[in-house]
Image (cartoon, rainbow, N blue to C red; front, side, top):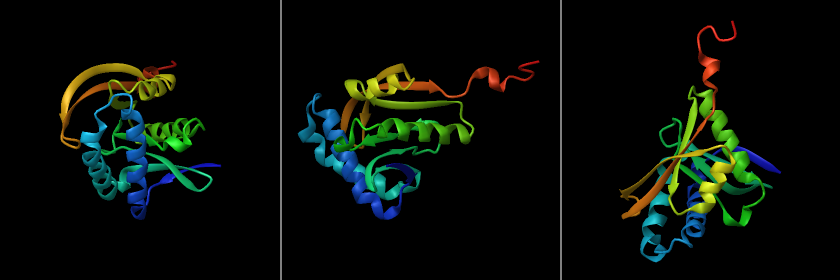
Amino acid sequence: MISIRNARGDEAEILAAIGLRAWEKAMSPIGGMDAMRENARAAFRNFTRSSWLTITVVEQGGSLAGWAAREGLDELISDFWIDPAFKGQGLGRTLLQEVERQIVQQGFELARVATHARNAEAIGFFQKNGYAVNWLSVAYSPKIDNDVQSVGLLKQLVDAEENVYGAGL
């Protein structure tokens, strides 16, 4: 059974391990992981320890299977990680739908996410769920101490007509 809930502070290490495993799987076709692995491990640990209040988790049968974060509690999904052992079970879609619901509930009309430009699996996942590529850039990431090519995707969550004064008159 799939369940969604807020993360707990005592889960930081497990969440960091899930993030690292998912990151390693995503980076394997891209290469260059060895040089970045320890920085990535430290970044996941630091983030899950300090920002667990911004994390929503998905469980399968009582086991943590993935997580998403909105670091700024805004429309940006800053992290989205599904443990490779749980891929293909609909957990990512279920987690994404919950995060999008939270975004709308907090008054935002669209959702944004960024991923590595060569992470075809993530780009495909978000496109399959209604996201469109909005930008491409290369920027230095202090979290992993390396330049990263990124793709930004966005999805309109609320129809513009719903918020127009006098709509439906």
